[in-house]
Length: 174
Image 1: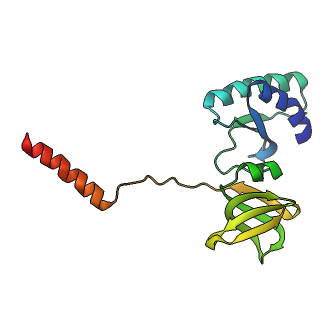
Image 2: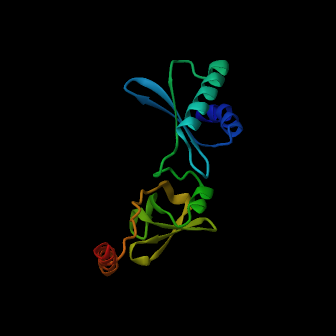
Image 3: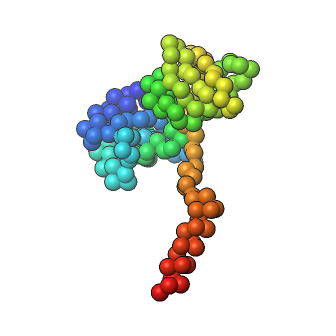
């Protein structure tokens, strides 16, 4: 069913100038929910989600691929987005990610680190301590980006003190 929905929804999203990131059907509180995730390199706005939701809803009402009632949700994949394929693993080079594997690689099935690209049939991950890990793509159970808080650069204490003293000196002369 997801493939059918993808085939129906993808042209609608593409015509809106966006990329269809994912389509999923889940049960939430006894109700069926069709979750559509959209993206673009510059980010997704609330208005993008509203517009795509209206268009997708109209098309799904017309084609009627689902036999039961459902709720449609349209959203961005978010900062901890799922990495779906080889291209995504390469696209987010340098980003912090968590990869789980079906079998142990370097003695672990959970691998957290910075994506360093894809070579042959392996994703390269820089794990803690700077070590590189080569993970076979065929062994990946799932992968997603991890949120990184941005730190604001602050002047060191001496610079802050100098700025405060300069400001005080100027005020003192007035």
